Image (cartoon, rainbow, N blue to C red; front, side):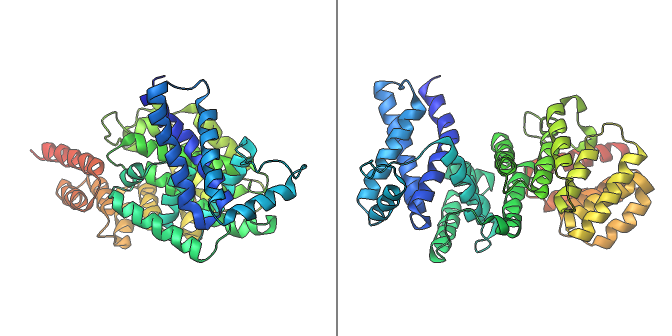
Length: 413
């Protein structure tokens, strides 16, 4: 593999590992320094490897350089004595040199601790997702800006404010006590849920980045499942939900980035292995008495992987949406329930229920009404699709909506 291909791949895989370890080592007040050290390591790799060639073990080279840079920083700062003292206390031989642990075990532990640190309710949800992308997933600032469809400067300011808040409150980078996991994990799951949804439901300019967001959310959720203290039913349910949704990723987006609606997807493209994984984690999450929104959403997603569109399928989906709205109401869930209602009781009944929602400023609301009117009233259907096209901020969504308007206009003519 050539250098121009290798370094970006190593950056994505190794930045997050080294950054998590160094952030944990330095403390929350030096989180930016930890990121800078890792970034400088990759810059040096690009310069050195371009002149001398790629080393025999590139990962070991990166780890060695990062360790040396971290030690140099520690020696120049007040935290050195504190860290060295702690290291000596845990060393078998007091003469041992202070070492920076980049073992796989310490990397995983550090990433888990950073997950709980970043997902702190003291900072806004979008900042939690941004920090997760940067520190836990190894995304560059440019990639995060692309993911949020915003400017690089906006992301830098957002992350800076979040870090300052964590520093101001002296938030410790550590795993909660086992008895605290239950109350703390909800915020972690919310962040991972938002991270996945940002990739799956928000079609942006860069389809590769969108898919990577989903895969990173799944990786972090799997990390929680693998840890016995965080392997909770709701964690398994969330991972199940992600597996079911991700199983339709290839069928949902065309190579040119255009979205393909559920009922128009090529079902041969659905990933059967991910569907099986989704079932496995849904069953694992069914233990005990916990019933979270993730359980219900995962069950709804499971029924969407059933290829045959039977009444039983849509009755089950409708029943699950009814329960979901009781546990946690959301406008999107209410709209999705209305679509299921149409499949069970017909479009006329669904139109009456949809209008009760009064989500006039939501493009999805008008898209749904456009779909429901399409069979009986072309004029009204076109009116709602035009409103949807005007309200949406997604070029991909607009493209789908305009195609529907074109088809309806052809029917009229």
